[in-house]
Image (cartoon, rainbow, N blue to C red; front, side, top):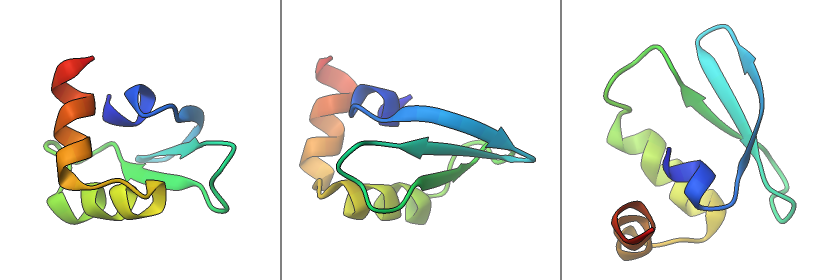
Length: 64
């Protein structure tokens, strides 16, 4: 998953959600696991929390 490649760690699963955290983050990132594919707005929220751009997203996703 993208968040793992971005250095986040899964800290728990709660219902239909997966919660990720990273040392530099003030709040965890929550992703719905019961929806496939993950909606774009959830990805955008995660990118905003991580301080990444869409370009960074695609580089991490496809180059690692």
